Image (cartoon, rainbow, N blue to C red; front, side, top):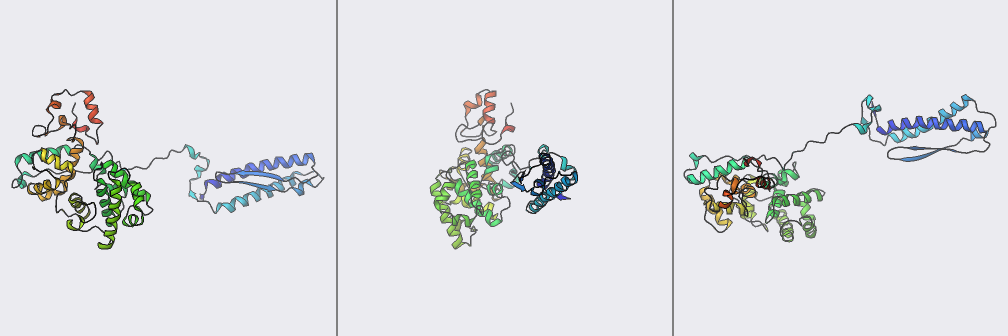
Length: 395
């Protein structure tokens, strides 16, 4: 049987109303009223308040005493009138299936379990494979192989911001059901906003845009929005005014020259305003599964030089040298691998050298920190850092 909660409550209200009317009729018959006074019954529900006025001329205009039979006949008429009004409203209410015993159950006491949601802030689905020394001896030195594999060991024990809120992860978290074409555009927007901006801020900005636009974050939304509107939505990222302009111009180019999609070549991608080689290679890897180069950001550029993998002054020079020593099969994973390491362990300022397995071969090691005792205060400071590095703390 399918009934509404409102109907169940109204049935109880109708019964109570009958009792009230019966008492009033009895009072009227006792006092032998001579003038017609309407009886007003107020009936209340959760979402509506209405007043039903019932005329009692036939009852009050007679000087004869009202018999019990007449009294209950009048009550039946009143009850039927109220019931008809309730049933007329029933058709407009949403019905829900309930069990028979739920009619007498207080719904407020039923505990509702919250939906289970994936926690992207504490778990990582990323697993990095180690270098196969048998296949990398032609291009990699034994030292590089050892250092790389130690970074892999560290990264597989921790969760870094790039693992949960990095550019490649953002489309999956803000719009898990997006079509491939929309995914690529959202990835482009994430990469463009990420420059000079932390992953957490970039993630929040993209999520804000996706929630703001009626159709979500897509090419059409950016084309229809004004530059000022976009700037307001991304106001917390670095160089937001310039990036708002880049987004508008890039969207127009994609619509007019690439059928609204991301091009498949690095040459065409870097023609988009505000998009450089790093963004271009990462976009091709995650958007088209094309690995034509290494995306080098400030973390990879800094750490590759610290460990002696390259000797360069610019990220582009670092990319060119890395592609000479890193096998192509590892080009896609090296960026998130080293970036996460740089976000949590090998920080640009105040690096956590006391939990780093590469401290003995690193040019920038903080030897003073290595000599300090491992105190509880130091442990708490490490635990409060970005990401989750608790498995690296062994004291």
